[in-house]
Length: 329
Ligand code: PCA
Image (tube, rainbow, N blue to C red):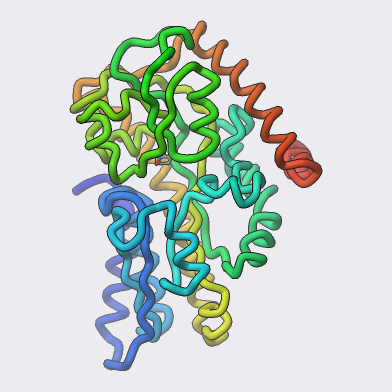
């Protein structure tokens, strides 16, 4: 059995057993678009969350997960929830820094490069993120970090100079900016499309987790993964505020409990998936290991520039968030 499947199995079995005992009734149907492949731990976690909600609401709320960007591409999911085209969905919030720089707080280079620090950073940021989402008609249910981000290439890279001119797949403003500052050419591509992009040479490099490279079998096109631990971006599961307002108190409590479980389960899966997927990349034939000292030193410098730019864009609120995080560490 696959690692994440094993992690999810016990919760799912319990949920299914409960659901099976329920009398038949008309369920409220919710569609839940997710951007990443069905086998990814975020998506599997979403399915287990949906099972938990079905069981916890006595079948009154029936969530269908649409993984792999099959219902909406990643970039369109947040708007789809806001406008009520779907009731619920999952999105990498740092993809929306054009709406608020604050959404990029979990992409500040080297600020919180471990699971432990990322957890503290999230706690420091959560009230602000919840308030911003509320203004946009969204209720935050849970958030789960991706494993630490590293760099993928189609060749050995020992310095920023080696990156010059490479076509770089980006997933948000931060990653595009990283490419610009290292002399690469950014092109934004959804995770669901990257195998194709690397196979056809549209992209030759990216920053991402071992998880996404593993899910998309990038060893078919790329040769090196360097552990950089630049940041751990989060996926957020959000529900339309109007839909949420219509949920009964009992069902809200059940969904909140399922959300808390999903956050904890997702975090453990993300941790477990980190080494598992790096081993998978190596088994696929890639060279996997820490970035060399020269490359790392140069990336830290680039990170300082990016941090200063984010602080400038996020203003006093950004400063307050970072100060709160540092105070909690
Ligand atoms: N995978 C996602 C975002 C961060 C990650 O590790 C992606 O590459 O799109």
